[in-house]
Length: 287
Ligand SMILES: Cc1nn(C)cc1-c1nc2c(-c3cnn(Cc4cccc(C(=O)N5CCN(C)CC5)c4)c3)c(Cl)cnc2[nH]1
Image (cartoon, rainbow, N blue to C red; front, side, top):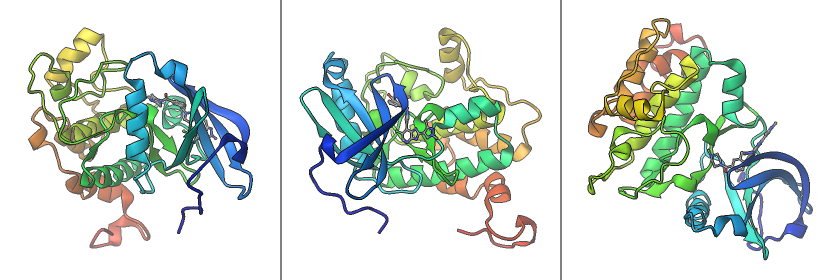
């Protein structure tokens, strides 16, 4: 079993703290090593004082812990456990050997089609796993994806995930770019939505992988309007297969978005993700 034998109770003294790995709005992450086993992990430290500002972040952290600790998938960052002291909450997270995906994307500007297709296949596999557990991530974007030592991606940050279906108002902090039309439609009480919101975000993610910017990137007002109309242009140098997949995900009607199993069998994915000998001379794609 790939899970190290971990005790139920953790405390800070069990870890040697290494270099800071990064920081986000609500916390910092350090490289850490569990003393007795030498197990390397990432320790995310959140200050209770910062959480208690009633911005509902405490609830998000609780949800992140509750949801992420029960997930086990190669493309989802593991949460091994958590503990707290008087001032801080600590999340013991899987260490992703190649860091934050958005930094790779910014550095490379955009990904070649084969890399974007392989990341898309891994995202589709992770999202199928989440949706089978009726978990909607709701915040799929490059900033919430890490890269493992073998170049595989790991969805992290379940602070916004919820159990489907849901109509929780999402306080719109951060970018609108990835939000589907049904989540930005304000006012109507019945803006119920389901896991299909992650399909829209997957379409935005593929576009950003290939083009280097989000499809509806604009001023907030214009982004809002362009999302509501699915008003985007795909550059002519994007392959027709990739264009076809993006257009089948960025569909206003959630029910008409391409299901994840069809994403995994899409020609663009098959063309770039068939293992082993050259895709050309293989009849059936590997499952
Ligand atoms: C860096 C690095 N270089 N190398 C070679 C490896 C790494 C590395 N980093 C991690 C990290 C890591 C570190 N910082 N971050 C970013 C970060 C840190 C703390 C909090 C946040 C945060 O608040 N988030 C909420 C908002 N969304 C958008 C975002 C989340 C976000 C993640 C983790 Cl969790 C696990 N393994 C890692 N490996």
